[in-house]
Image (cartoon, rainbow, N blue to C red; front, side):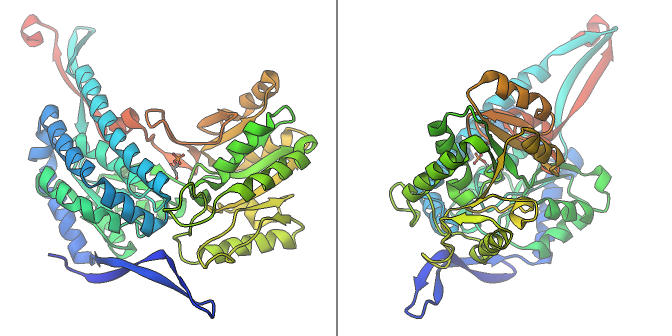
Length: 482
Ligand code: G3H
């Protein structure tokens, strides 16, 4: 039963006619739920929770793990379909889409292992000041999970699975771009979990606000923009009671010192700025390059960009593919024009020349504070470069930024690198040395400061985010110990 309207889903890959008109290809149809149907999903999750007394929250850990293992087997069997749809729906290359699927399966296995460890620790008794206590991990109640379009599977599962395995019923609102790839998984969800425990909804903001306004969501797990997260939190009638696990905006800087190894730096800068077209929250979105190495750096970047393969997701070794967000090429062009109008020299600009949704990797130098690209999170293949002579310049940028996810430092002199780490380690949650910024491995903590995150996403941290420590305590006596 699918109440609501059927919506056509188009691919960013399409046909360009002789007059230059672009027609995106129809990929499929997807039921978009209305408010009443969304609230029925909240009812279902509420029934599965039943004030913490439902079968799922009170089920033993071993049994919950069996359900998740059953799901993982069913999911693994649908790998080819999910990967192929992801390639068409968001234009992730075959290599990256397969990587996203495999990384998600690994996340599932690691989550099961981490839960076993947590459960072993929770089964132990401690005795303190004459009190025998068992510290358990208990679920929190219905969770709303929303992942982003750039990792529609992996970054939804990074909250969905830990929330679920800890005993919380979940409602998943699939990403607007990246919802069709859930179709091959629907049966697996239905067959592996009891009714009402997992509720997958396709819809838009018309359903999300009413879900939050119902006041029956206990945890909001959202990965996307800071503005959207604020609006969701405030739609809840009791925001102070809502736990939030958020992965938000970032504008990570890379700092290239004059002691940098240029081969390594350029390889990492290319990957960090342009992998999946720069559509990663962890992408390098600003580069500070020491004036002494600037010409060499720009020449090497230019050389590297010319070698980046531009094409379709199935092309061997492709790096730059069509952009799924409607109007994104035009937005990037605006940023680049604005930079040029403010004196920025633009290299490799080719927005829209290959095809409507393709944007060629572009470097803007020198970038200045007057430019929009200095302030806005471009989330695309455009990288501003700021020359510096004094390390105060990048430090001021990082300290003054409203975001605080990660940064990268490129340099071979340990003293110079160390001098930069100390003033900045309290500004971000990961400092990468001679490497691009990145989330993985997923067992490492992944979070951010300021407007970039709330809570920590990684295998074992996430289990803690979706649970609360609860005590069973008794005054010390041998009888109570038993
Ligand atoms: O888009 C944000 C992702 O968390 C980035 O993950 O660094 O593994 O590409 P990644």
